[in-house]
Amino acid sequence: MIIGISALSCQNSYDHNSYRDYRFVHTIPDSLRTDEDKVILRKLVNIIVNDYEVKNNNVKLKSSKDDFKNQGIPIAYYYKINEDLDELNKYVNAIDTLDMKVLIDSLKEDMRRLVIE
Image 1 (tube, rainbow, N blue to C red):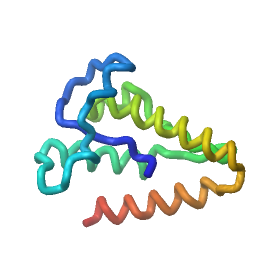
Image 2 (cartoon, rainbow, N blue to C red):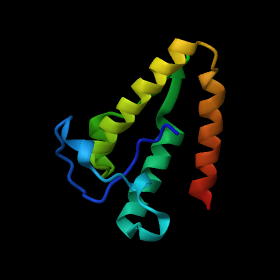
Image 3 (spheres, rainbow, N blue to C red):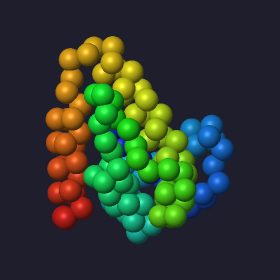
């Protein structure tokens, strides 16, 4: 859904617009993911579980670019997640009927199960 996740390269010096051709891990079939891809995916799931918050029915990411760098997550994910959240928030604000707190809590619970498995 909101994840906007991924990639093979561990470059951490991304220009904001250069990630568009990036190969994100959620686009790679499970059977083709490398061990590095799996590590990145697990870190991203932890960010979703711990750092997504809902304020005024909008989803926000608490993590900074430095947080991503410090965790060894390519900065392309930071930009992609924020862009995806901006689009989601525009949609939610336009229809004004979704309770994002309920949806994000459900997403986090699903993600917690993924981390455990």
